[in-house]
Image: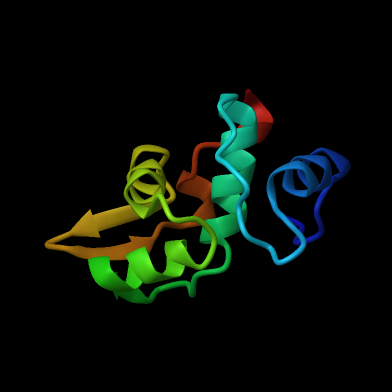
Length: 100
């Protein structure tokens, strides 16, 4: 998968992230929401286990509603949770916004 953003991703991120890179609000449309979630989870390290507190702090750098976003990471297959620890899943297992 290429690391450069396509025009759809750029337009969604420009619409929902402010100049500081914080999330203005979470898109309600599923495809746009997945673009934002994918962008956020890509900022995390591969193969690193995060505590719930660490994930919350990471999400809070982008948006105050860390509970919802953390849940969306799990529900949409971006992360796995095991005994309170979170790890980014392989990109091949993520819900693909491109397929919507």
